[in-house]
Length: 349
Image (cartoon, rainbow, N blue to C red; front, side, top):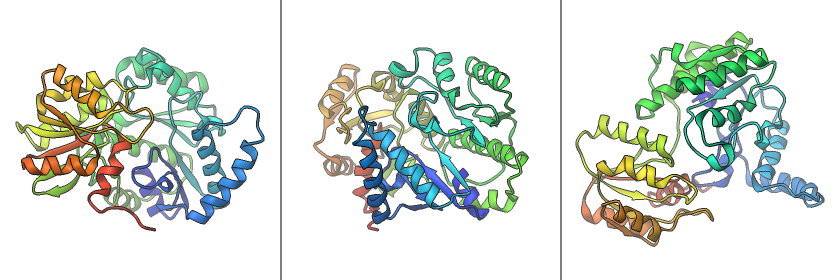
């Protein structure tokens, strides 16, 4: 949403999201366009030569971050929306100096083996991106998280802009109450940027929000039978998904195509989603961290659900179509690209 607004204002925007859905180059964008393949190859060769000379070889995410920094610098970006990979204080994106606005989004239990076992610990880690000289914008989190955020802002001398203070009066194409909360966070960021001297017109805000494209977030891919794709992959995402189902499909049971990573809290996700399920078709996401389709199906059956495993996305979708039931595919963004490819959305550039 924020990248779309700033692009409408005419700024040269850099965008660094993760993970990608269908094309790796989604992770490196200028003005909404993916990095051209020749530029990616050229910069990667430059970064690889340095990385291979290092005794402590960088991780994949560190390498991609370095490639992104080079690309954004070459393109002389006015502003970059830089998404942290995991946590904050120890993340490779945090190599930057004080950002214009440090943004703390919805915080829940995820990556607990790295970030901590309490919301306070996780919030402390994420607040590592807050630095003297920054402004801070924050999603309306639970009180124990907000205390960590406000304490960090006070310690670093940073002004805090709260999403809770914003009125989401604009139209957005993204579905779900949680997306309205995300919109409020964007409005808080915009208020912070304006106070720092950035020119952002109301027209740019309105048009940018209205034109936001964010695949695999309760995205409708087909009407008959209804097919929804969502990237929800942890308990708080599952809760947002069920709230959206309550709003748009009240009382309906759906067929879930589900795949998850084994380091995610998949049993907690099942507890949340099970009351909405008619049956499940499971998949193995395209990741070395994946929970196999067979393991997930066994967990579903053990929890009292009906499940079968599929070898690939095509087979899972065909199984869903044969039932004629409304279908929601969710559980991992690493699975979303394979699902989306089956609906012929692949970008051939």
